[in-house]
Image (tube, rainbow, N blue to C red; front, side):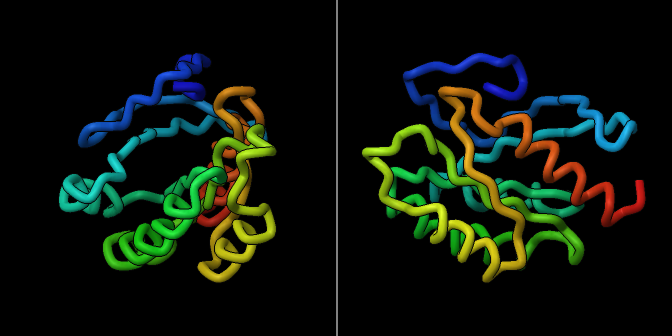
Length: 150
C-alpha cells in the first residue's frame, strides 16, 4: 500500500492470491512503468504465485526483520525464483520493518549476506516510516533497466 497510494495501516492484511498495482518511476531521466504483482506468501497460494515469476524482469523478496521464520522462508522464495523465473531476472532482497530496532531478530549483515549468496541486491525498508520504500523500487528498476538496456 505504501508505494501505490502512500498509505500505511497498522492492521496487517495478508495478500490473498495476487494483488496488482501500476506505478511509474523515473530512472536516469527515463520513465519506467512498473507492474507490481504482490503475491501471497502462504503455502496454500504457492502454486498460483509461481506462475507470476515467468516473464518478470525484477522480483522483490521481502522478509520481516523481526521474524527469524520470515527470514528462513527467503531460501524457499529464492528457489522458486530460480526454478520459475527468467534467466536474467534481477532480485532485490528487502528486509522490512527496519524501524523496529528493539524487536529486530535479523541483522542487516545477515540480510546482506543472504542477498550476496544469491547474487541479489539488498535494502532495508520501513513501510511505517516510509524509509527506503521508494528507493527499493528505484534500485530494482535501475538494475532491470541496466540489464535490459531500456
